[in-house]
Image (tube, rainbow, N blue to C red; front, side, top):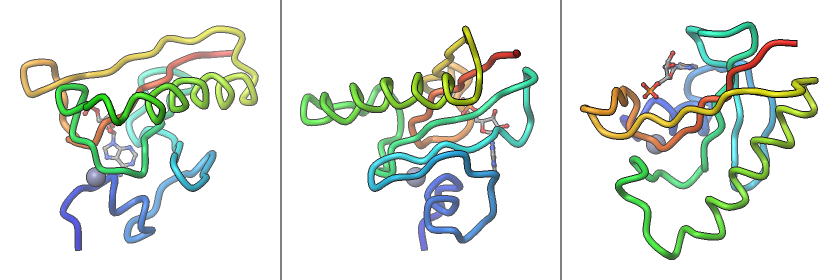
Length: 105
Ligand code: AMP
Ligand code: ZN
């Protein structure tokens, strides 16, 4: 079994408040929200961080960002902040690439 906590969420080995799921992406509410609405969107493919992106990921990451906006819009957010922590020195705690989306209505 994967040790990655977000892979465990993808595999439904641990629960999460899932907002959206398709073959490539999963979005769920952050367990420790820093805004009235705070969710994370991840690719199902285990990529550790921005530092691990390869050119083959270009299409996936483009679609990830488009999907993030689609979900935020569907949640009623007229605007929002996005945040990506990269590497230990960048404050990253979970080493499965994720975008934080923070907003309020
Ligand atoms: P970071 O790696 O610093 O960008 O942030 C990781 C984020 O994952 C933090 O905001 C945590 O609150 C969040 N998080 C950690 N474990 C879970 C979980 N089981 N379900 C939802 N969010 C989580
Ligand atoms: Zn993972």
